Structures are given as C-alpha cells and as structure tokens.
Image (tube, rainbow, N blue to C red):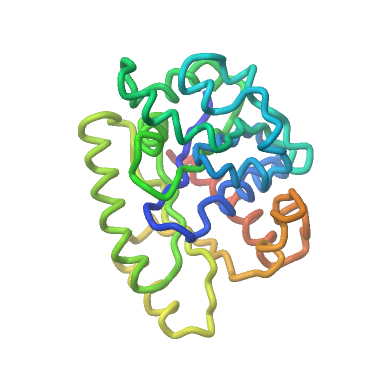
Length: 256
C-alpha cells in the first residue's frame, strides 16, 4: 500500500511544484515506485515531468468526475522515471461540476484506492488555495509536506495552513498529519532566512526536515526543458539536495 502525501501551501510561489516533481524524481532514483498527481489546473507539474499538457486524452479532470480511472489517465515521465496523473486547465471546471456529486471531497481518494498497491509513494501537487481540489488532496493523503521559504510572510501563511490541516483531520480524514516542513529557496547569506529557520526548528522540532533546499538556478531552468532538476543537472546543489530529501523521506516513512 502506497504512502500518499500532499505537497501543500496556501501561499503561491513557494516551490510546491518544484518540490513535487523533484521529490518524485529523487525517490525514483532510489528505486521507489512513484506516482505524481497533478492537482493544479495550471499543469506545471505535468510539464515539469516532460508531458505535453495540451495533448492529453485523459487527465485528473476525467478521473475526478469518474469518467475514467487513474490507470487509463496516467502517463510515464521517461525523464523522471515515475508515473504522472497529468492535468491541464480543464481541471478548473471540475470544482463547479463536483458541487452536486456525492462524496465530492473524497473523489480523489476513491480513485487512488484502485491503484495504490502499485506504488510505494503517491505525491499530490496541490494548487495554491484552499479549494475543493486541495480538499480532495488532503482527504486522500496520509500526510502533508509543507515547502516554505524562510521569510516573514511565509510564517503568516503557515499558521493558516496548520489550522486547515487540523480541521480536515478532525472532520474528514483522521489519518492526516503534518509529515514535515521543508525549507526551500534557502539563502544562508540572508540573516532573515537564518532567523526564520531557527524559529521553525524551535517551534516545530523534528517536524522540520533536516534537508534544506538551496536557491538554485539549475532547478529554475529545468522545467523549460521538460525535465526534473534532478535529471537536468544531477550534479547541481539543488538536485543533490532533493535526492538527499528523497532519502530522508524514505527513512522517515520507516519510522511512521
């Protein structure tokens, strides 16, 4: 049975998609069977995995509405050596169409239940908002990975996200918990980054991952080539950090 994790943060531009794609590729390099679910209508994780979102015959949209299953819609990221449930702008319409459906917040959970024995990890890249799509991700997951920059506004948004996770845990998904906070786009030269990092460690303790993802140009360039950063430039500091993060995730799961 797969371990299912949401990569979530209500704040945009904090590296959710970069983390989702590169963690998937990092885990694949460690010989883990991985499915990446793109739950964002922008489809950036789909493109970052090297899949053309414009040419999809089936996507997360059809899966959420029950028009096809995950096994039919998934595609292989040859670049990253993991499977992808791809997405495009059609998914934005699913929120409206799901309003009248039964168990609308559990549509993704039910769909993934049919294939979770085929994977060790299922990673869900959530959109940057508390929407019906994000709620589906949180209801399907065993835990949440929170990527965040070490800056003041990130701390403000973090408290909102933690409250949301607590509400979902209490009302919809008792299995849901915070797996850990991942510090991303980290610049050790900035005093503020070091201060916020220290605050996170003090407040959240072992919920803060040991791995820190540095600010790295090669990670930012990789999506334009349709490649995960881990594949695009394996020797870069960013790629090495995500491979280390994958190894830390594997070890953390053994203790769960």
